[in-house]
Image 1: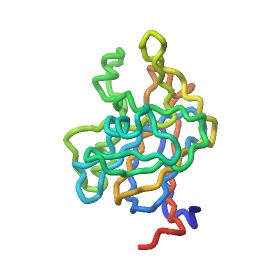
Image 2: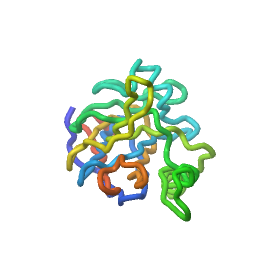
Image 3: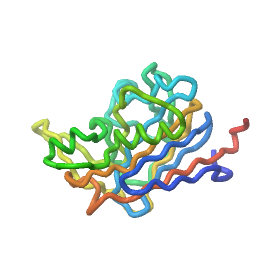
Length: 208
């Protein structure tokens, strides 16, 4: 199933988030133009934003820490919402770590304002007149977090090369949000946070 055209391209500036509406059957491609940039991915069902992609339910669905290509991410109601269809990165992604928020940066010793993925999500959704009361745990694209032999989590810099991308097929009409993670106190984003790109493609088999 190959895309016929890009129907939406959204540039996500470093430290910011963007939301796009997608239809069932659309392909969503998220890329890191400069490499090594983590992207917090969220998806909310269009008919009811209370139903959203759940990292916890997905782990139980696929019996691993992250789906393989051709496997699905599921919602809080255990319905498939996205299918992983392609990954040109080294395949290091995370579904253990919550979105960064103001409290996280205070705990890391930062004083004053600091962008966060939690706030980016809320702001991006408000742009589409969607309000949420709880920030779901995201799918952290290009983020290299691994447990070591002792069970401790190791936070590594993203190994994604410039231009690396992950593509998904939407299984439900939904709103997809991507935050270019602003984390600069823990070394997950290479030298410093960078931009991401979202592309939405119409596929040959998708007719509305």
